[in-house]
Image 1 (cartoon, rainbow, N blue to C red):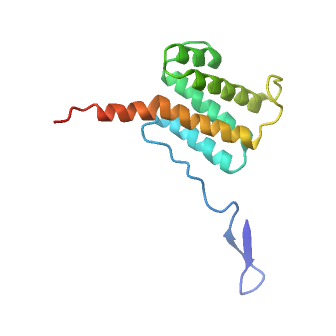
Image 2 (image 1 turned 90 degrees about the vertical axis):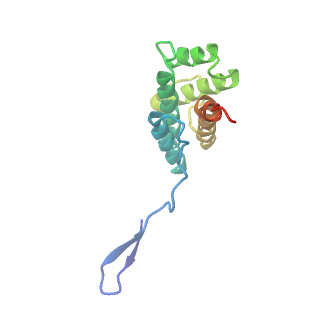
Image 3 (image 1 turned 180 degrees about the horizontal axis):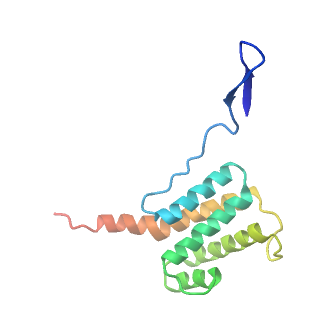
Amino acid sequence: MLARRGSNGPDWMYHSHYPLGKPDDSVDELVPCEIASDFSEAIRCKWMRAYRATVLMCRRSLQVSCDLEKAQGKDLFKQIDDLASKGRITATLQKMAHRIRLLGKLGAHGDYLDIDETITQKDAADAVTFMKHYLEHVYILPGKLDEGDSPSS
């Protein structure tokens, strides 16, 4: 926070706070609002350099998507594989989804040895990038195709 001394006396006045500005946390309107709000929060967390929170919110976005897509399975691992087996996501997206799942697990619990101990800036950036591709593949592109399906003259 930045404060400045007032011109009359010893009083301090609020001027601004850091970081200045705000991230572009907009999400395409074709993404269901339950997912969009979580993913917007992930973007804001990354901007604030809260990397654990970033991967947790990306994982949450992924979990909500699996639930909305009615993915079968008692846990996120099985739900991701179910989406892949149904052709809802590609093998590459499946692999990245499992990476997000593991990063989210590490961010939440911090005691898993199957990935590094630290959530890095790169991990957070990768998580956000992956979720953008995931949302594009699962919601945005199909929605745009549906919009274009109306018969033309």
